[in-house]
Image (cartoon, rainbow, N blue to C red; front, top):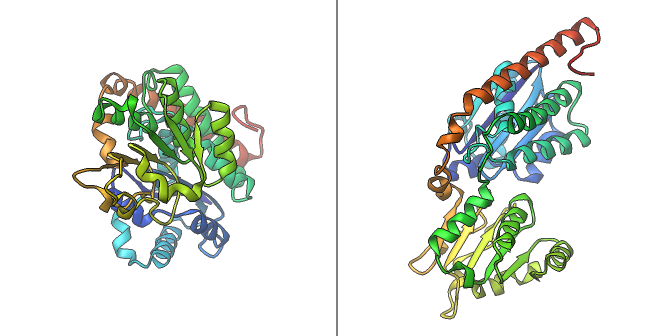
Length: 343
């Protein structure tokens, strides 16, 4: 029984390609329900705005990799040979090292960002609660979270680091110098939506509105933070009333389409789409409306990271140290002896 990792990210795939392998919640649930048929014993799927990765335990890593690719291709209506070049396949120590690197923030588009650590921690917790993990993955993912915390405590990798959501706010400030006098709509109260709102509120922005699929959550958040909220059902008819829109939700279909901004009185000049799949139809981009997706934020993300790049070797040293501890734990389990590095 070994650990494998199959996935892709912004480092390997374009946004279009990421969308082609992205698994929505329904497909993630279906894959987990069929895991035994695919040769999977334990599984965790990490899905973010620029990453789609499947971590699994199997007796035959290579055959299971093929099974997963065929399964995804079938569900997506694609050919397996079209998907294979998009994926990176890692196994055993290489898979563990990659997970620890992801949790540490050194695989992120924004080097050292903190959002990914929350996503790893919460993602694992959901699969553990659903019964899709066992003793080995429980240990590995708990260690990954601990590695991420240790890296951020013992190195400067996250000092002054942006997150994807804060990069989005930086883009707003750079593109629209008069953004402070504009009406801003944020769609989604997930990690990125909340952080974007918090950043805007910290800047003292006077006109913020939140829309969320669950209206009660938007209403509660708006009341607590003293901003405005709108029902989710009002998004299509109200979108054109906002100068700037930031979206960060999981949706099968585009939430924003050209017809939403077709009227002569449409005020919208900038849409920043942090969703995967994309929340905004690319066709809304025009001479009057600037659409920026996640991959369009890379240039801003690359600024001011030189000092943090110097920390990468230090981070890799911590990862190597923690991998040694994991190996000692595994050997202890094989011998049936207690280990000082885990229970």
